[in-house]
Image 1 (cartoon, rainbow, N blue to C red):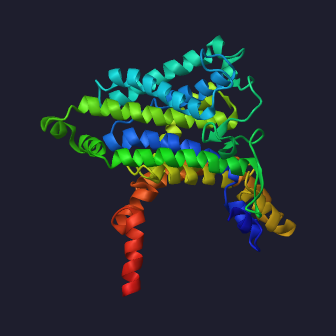
Image 2: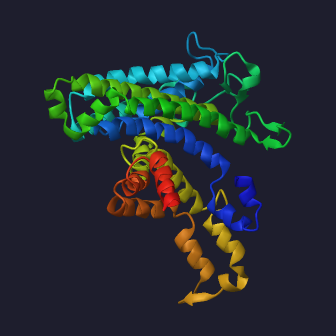
Length: 389
């Protein structure tokens, strides 16, 4: 659909507006991380500001294993196994952090999880074991092969991911050709989809309903016999597992990780932003929130990675319009540079404030309220009613 859109008569407009496939890959694995954040924060009401610890653990485990720095896990370890191990490692970290943090609540819980995360961030930044320059991060050097996603042991049903190391497909079914990045998009998307379905199953299970009861009134949940500490800690561990898987996908695609994009507290801040934009306590909402956030940043970016607004205006306004003086010697071209060039974060910040003020339930939460339930059920019901009327 993207190819059809950018090759249509409205090519310039679609190129400027639609995010690139590279951006969508980033959206996928970070959305899984944001969903794991929403699973604990949106369904129990406990904000985990230190969630980056689990994301970074998964990412670093993949890179260190690929470089042969972990015992029993060499560069030949299948990536699908590394995904599970990364999730388990992150879950163990979550168990250790959660067993202490859940003795507190409210802002104190948020701060202590942030504190643990920052301790790990400082530790990994100065740990010479991970690489010769740990502050600059570490890259995969132990293998030049791309990390493979698929069915372990079945070579024909596995594909390598990565922009440079990924597999490309030519002539699938006689007419489908996919670049390495497009193959990575579908492979990572399949893993994210499986994780999302597992999280959905948890949310709609009796376990998930207890989490919601804790969010609504923890004292009442405790009064009717639930050990809320165990439920919260279990949810935290599960959340850490999926955050670790997301970090492993990130490292598998990028083939590198740094303390800043792994353990830094702003990584958890981005997950919080995606959850607020998409809708807290909706699970799928963070996916839309991250897509909106990333799409807006790209559309308003300095370079306009997918085309963007700035290159579109420069290419389509014409020299005469761009050189037109607006006031006091300032031309249209200078005004565009002043207000758009390199100010994406400013506009995203304004959008965030507007969302908090006027769309407090996020994109998906607002749509669910408007249509009276989950969209997958509400929309067919509305269409059926419209068809009968």
